[in-house]
Picture 1: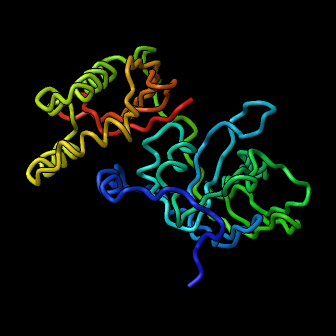
Picture 2 (picture 1 turned 90 degrees about the vertical axis):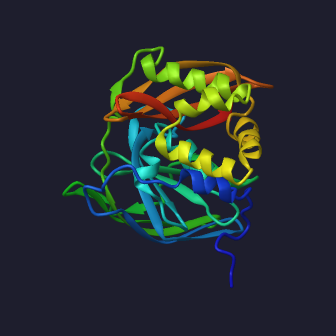
Length: 288
């Protein structure tokens, strides 16, 4: 059987990582997004089977206006999961893309007008931002959804994609204070406890889902290894962590984080309020 994404190689997401992260947070208020079609670039071939839409700044180097980005790829997107993040581009690249799954980000204006695309399939095969005159699009805004066809038949890149994607909320939530408020205090306490492997101090800072997972790892004698994984692979051995703001929406919050390890680090921490108290849920960091 043909590999679903020819010419594309990325480190697969560890199974343990996936088990911790897969959890819905809300019921979908609209019909789910759908997409079908094909994307070809260089030696890479991507059969489109899923889509996910979100507001974010354009990848265009000119201007910084927000657009509706639609991630299309050869797999299913969990919107409730990715909605938890502010930088959905980073989240999708980190937690959807792997050795078997690739993604292309299509951009549209609020009325559905095509605005460009971006993708990366490997060295020499990608586009930081492309707005080609050859692209034909019938995508338009209709009853709160982006619907239509977008395609191009260029020599080095060709694609045909049919979309039916709900238009997402433009604002993530209510801005938090610059220091992140009470949620940030909990996150920084977690960061300190993780750095010293102080399980006793860290455990009360976890949300119920993550606390249960830690307990299961401890029962199986795997907690020390998992904490090492969290420190090196997820936390990137970040020291001198600082929260620089974020947003709150209901019982969820996203914190903007920066810090220092071997190099500068930035990213997001996801928090959840349980019984009136903020708890740590997840984080996604990267190097600058």
